[in-house]
Length: 131
Image (cartoon, rainbow, N blue to C red):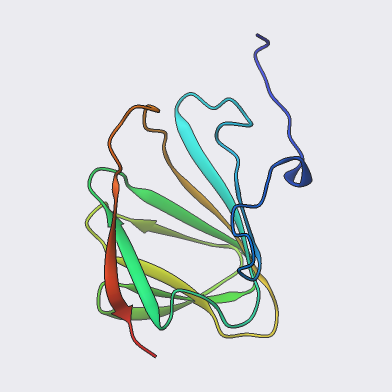
């Protein structure tokens, strides 16, 4: 095994299926050992508004908004976040993201990589962000 891995986004499958936008889990294709990373493209009116949120039992998450203007619901606060901004969420922070703007939002989601045999770390919170 070499000391590096290179992948283009289009080489990594989109896990969203019919849901608008794309979500590409880069961790395994890049053979990351310590860091989990996901790319997300969010068209207008996509995300968690009117749906659930989540938090983690152990994982801190870092969201880096590459471009666009997104709304983050973090516990009870709704915050506008524009491209070039990073948001850190402690494990216990319930969170969800929404794009209300016509421009697509692009972001990276970064956390510690858990072992493949680790129990599920994410906890879903139903009805977190009513419309």
